[in-house]
Image (cartoon, rainbow, N blue to C red; front, side):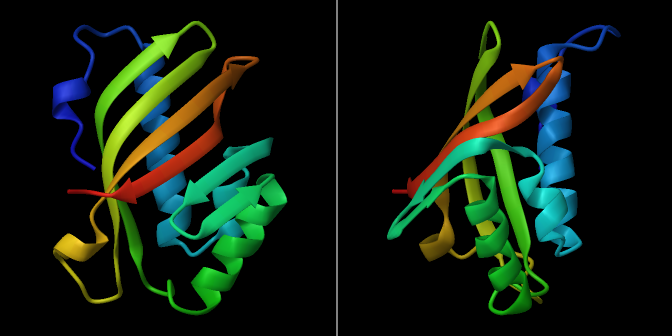
Length: 138
């Protein structure tokens, strides 16, 4: 994740800093194949929509990732480059370029490039994923 274009200016932590930290923790959990840590960053009522997939709730996200980490996603890395972050009070919308690098890959194949939209919600100062959707990138 290269976020230099979104890095805030100055020393004070911002909502953008916290959001980028959420992404770092999310993809660290992916790299560790830790479905529990990954899903813990989602709200209990989160939704995930991807081509052919609809997951409702944190437990559905956890189960999907656990099955993936035990199977086709073992050793993979999720990549996500936030292109736009908009904070609207306690909600943030992040549009990103995303994809999955399978074990041994260093470059994301064109057929696995996605554009994603993340809806994040802040409760008690902590950001969590409320909704995620992606579609093939053109």
